[in-house]
Image 1 (cartoon, rainbow, N blue to C red):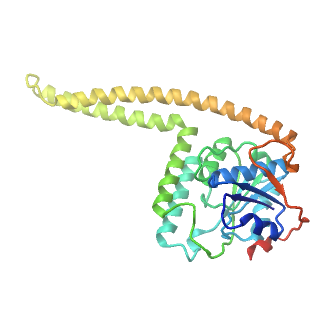
Image 2 (cartoon, one colour):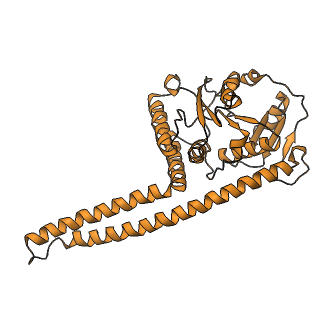
Image 3 (cartoon, one colour):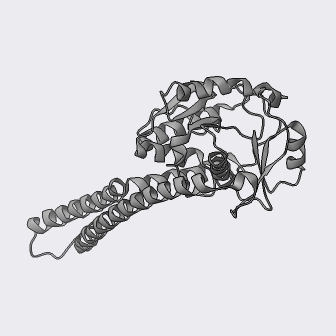
Length: 310
């Protein structure tokens, strides 16, 4: 059991250690969900984990479902498994939240090319091999970006149904539902643009080109009707500007694709460096320099996943 204490002020580390947690990572100040998640995955790799299960700290998920979550990976049928909360059946979710969850997951499915049912679920299992390939670039949340990245990498993602507990407090991830949608929407757009730049900028270029052609045809139609009358010049000006913009955005699409190709090569290099770094690291004993300290609590190992449900 590894707990990441993201700069909390409520004695999280002391409570976790008292419960028998094996390892702790404590940040001196809050770094956000994405940074904590990646730190935890990286630490698990360094500690030699073959399968890593991530669960949130708000008691939303049940420990007894861990067996169901890891089964597809143990059977070598999946690289990543995501717990499907079946949000349509969660009583304390409002109708609006249920609709937003369903709509958001459908957007992520289209963006990632996967069949993920519950894209914002934080109850996930990862194979060791998949962890070497995942990088999170935003600081807000890992949930959506990792799915889009996994889809691009061709990793196999499976959904398994899981149960949830009733909430004990409000979410601290965002200020409101609107804020959550806004920030997640930017994450999806940024991630999709990062991994499929030609599709994004190509679509924008086509829109400008079609706008320019349409306005140009409009000007030409009226010009042929009355060649001696100088009218609809504005349509011609906007048409020329739109066509020029379409070519400029098209060039941006080409450059973005070249950058994306270069980033894929860099990610491949980083993956190999991560293999080398983790295989030679001694941070499990706390005697090697690293950006955070993995503290071993000294408690004997135990394996009762329902113990954390209390």
